[in-house]
Image 1 (cartoon, rainbow, N blue to C red):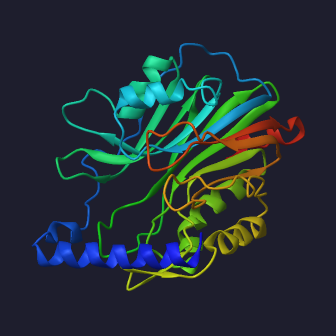
Image 2 (image 1 turned 30 degrees about the vertical axis):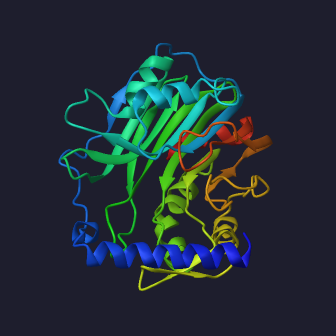
Length: 304
């Protein structure tokens, strides 16, 4: 991203923030409470068959899109063959029978697990989800460190699940980190995910929106161009024993050309990856990775 574009973004953001305050839109400053129901929502897979040892994973921040739009996006060329799908910014509302991830999963005949993070203004909630062609088991919600971001602070969680493959079990972790935090805070917020990934020693994939924009945030509000946050975060991931195989994906944001999304692995080979640039249903672009699970390490996942 060019310096001119970065400066333009900063000016635009500050102007919008000041306008919100002066117009009385103080609701933007509200912290978002935890969800009324923290239980994991589940939809069963139509089959009990394991996934192949070579499979496709997709991570996608849906920006609160409807279940129908999400189901249509998952039917696009790069995503239709996905075996595991990790989703962020999934909404669940009182007037809808399921979270939008699990409703889309039913249309696509996939298993689904949804973990709510924080409450929305209408009493619904927002969280992360994992979809799979095979059953999801050993589900765990990981509480991430709360960081007060002034605007719309809220509880953050990651969701971990095991899927069985032809090479053995694979642990999958869905994560969504805060946006307006410092590089050091970003590393700290990812900490419980890396600790969970280290615990079992077997094949693990961590995927999601880690929000590695090229900004730090003065007072958690004012964006300051600082270069690449992803370098700092990925160094901590590698120090924890995971690989960062998709750093060459290019932008995963439809806005400002930012690389915000990531896939981290252990005992899993990434044989190809890319960004589904034709899917424009969100402010993010879907990131996909073709994986091969290493059988020698798969037996260790059961220890998680």
